[in-house]
Length: 149
Length: 149
DNA sequence: TTTCTATTGAGAATTATTATCCTTTACACA
DNA sequence: TGTGTAAAGGATAATAATTCTCAATAGAAA
Image (cartoon, rainbow over all chains, first blue to last red; front, top):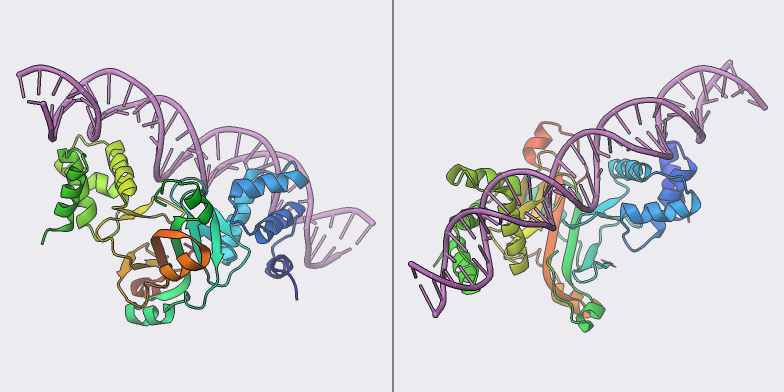
């Protein structure tokens, strides 16, 4: 079974997108980083291998992935957006308001009722976002104050 | 029983916050507008009554309300954040990716498992965000394309 | 009233993201 | 293996949202 990275490369190629070394490195960075990185973080990572890469290229790649529904944007209101391209199956996030850590949560209990809502309100749903905000164990221990999301 | 607006005014007063006419108007605009307005929209509304009000004042008020946990920010990645200060009870949103309309959803089925997660992952949760993205009935009828959130 | 300090207003500054525009290059096809 | 062409890249300017700054104003407690 192919990795998410390989699958994504193939899918994009089939759709007629060109595969440049920069683009492949960006895709690799996004799909293989489980910490929900920012554009800036991916940019730094890619630059270690391709030092001439432009930040604009990372943004353009993100825009393309969004169009394809292959990346999920987690915008927290303040600072840069975080991205989740490692996994597409619907899942929830635990977001620490102390240190901004984002933890993925897989739980059958969480994938609730989109089809029920679709019927009740007439919406045709295509994606979802379920985030819980709070303090992670280490920030609780450190006695961090709770900033709002 | 007092309105959300009145309750909020009282709570803030008790906490030692001063109540200026601008601030009261901003609070009223946020708490009594059910359409999840942006800062800019509240600013426009408040200016009709107090034309000298500054946009910065609205932002400062939002920051204060965030600190108090009295407003929920819905940042959509592109454009301005939307705010929900009309109701604090946990509820979900149906967000139309065609016209950006945000519909509140009250449903017991949706308030899932925070305490369960808190235990499992050791997080101390204080708020949540449950958003479903899709097309509202009128955008479906209009054949709008589905932009990602 | 007076005093004290939170709050305001106006605009500058900052930050993230998008747009521009010219160059480079992936890739289909000869 | 070349070649044409349009997609993609790079550098930087532009835009948009939000935050900061600081002097002036005005709640509210005494």
